[in-house]
Image (cartoon, rainbow, N blue to C red):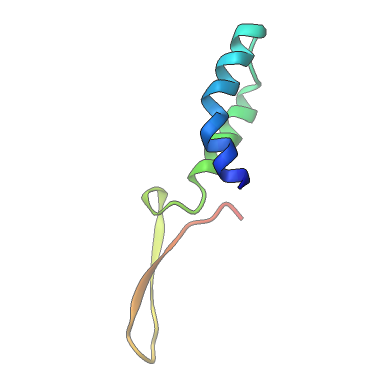
Length: 64
């Protein structure tokens, strides 16, 4: 739920913060963007294979 709220409202937050003053600090904007990239396969992943059944799957990199 938090992810969806940030994803849906980040652009508005950044635009309104810029209109009101100097905007948000760069590290805050950077951390929001990184948060949205966390766990998304397009931003990096590892291929994992089960040694017993040989099945393979992708695990998205996590920020944790």
